[in-house]
Image (cartoon, rainbow, N blue to C red):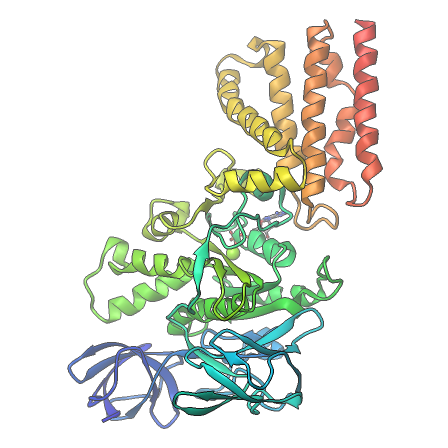
Length: 585
Ligand code: ADP
Ligand code: MG
């Protein structure tokens, strides 16, 4: 039987018996309202089902019908620029802004069935095709070409291929397979809890350039890499995620908001369409899919949302694109997991989270990577995953943060004290790390400036020495320091304030190219060397501290990207100011 009867309702979890033919992870329709649910446990013929909608009004005796399919998404043209809930039901902007979500049980298709797409074939009749081969393309938006691929599980000789205007549901090709002819349209289905297959993973060796100095210079993430941003409430997790979504050099962005505050998604909705992608001059929404879950949405939908998001991301990766996925915050997802586990009366692990928390976190991040994609082609795609984590009270020893840090390769630790001092991004440079650093150094030294990694290492070493010196200052006062050490504290202050701090809300400062990062850091360290030289020639530290050029250095970040001459001017200012002091000494 694939029809059962409800025996128990407990919030988003219901129990039903009589589903003898159903399997774990099958999607079910609950009651006459056809609420969508998913079987998350089977004991004999008793199924525990998490329901993705409000279960008020549902009770024992109501029918549950198994669809025999796992929770899946529809993949095809028309996802970009859209907004979905955690199980890929389309949300309209107005509904989101007003906070009214879809009526119960309404299942609008994820992909528009009416819209016509201009399909341009690439494959030819007679071609031998396998899963992942590109049949043809449609212009999904003005900036992204959607590659229509042979779905997984199909291979054979192409018997027919069309050209012209079609809806996603129209047949655009016919493949003669061993089990007969298969008609192919532009919709693929994929079960969200299962990664899409690839040929092989390869080592990520290029940075995902975010335009955020502290990240790109000191703690870079690779294209195809994983990063976590843990931090207490208000420390800037969401702002960092937004900055990356806006400026990172990814082709496609999938933004999953499991916001603690409903208005965070509203900010995204108001802001993103207005923002212009510096690469294309078009709205960033042309390459973005939003998945929205606010705190007033059912907990189970939140649990599904990161899988929905990463499946969409894998699909665009399979086309050969660089995809970046943001999840803000994965703690809300883990809490949903904990709530369902509690209702299932499973044995609780640390802080009530289920024992399988760590493996779920690992399975999720392992879907990131740089890969050779499926099909008879050489394309490489990347999927970078950046997850925010909100440890309660900022306590990083809690289970979600710990499980995440064991698996991700980059850690951007947000610091309450820094955000309190309004040092933003509040990424603590002393405990954050990137395990991609060596590879990224090679790339940046080879593509931007061969001195870059040397400068980066020197700046970090100065920052590390600073904390020791500040301790001395606290104990015995600044006057007890040598002039060399005083100068060192001046340069580290300059690195912190003029370089690491970056205002996300300033027109120019919000984004900083690698070329500009290179110029800025170069000048700060050049100035330091010149000042050291002056000290060694008898100039007094007071005189160095009084130079006007310090003011120019503090304004480096505000120099616009195309004003290259200004950087050279500042170098000459430094040269002449220092030689003047040396002459006078
Ligand atoms: P969280 O998501 O960790 O709770 P938010 O990202 O919402 O924190 O950041 C809280 C506030 O901190 C923002 O509203 C903003 O005022 C400030 N902030 C964070 N990052 C920056 C930044 N890079 N530049 C300027 N202000 C920032
Ligand atoms: Mg936030």
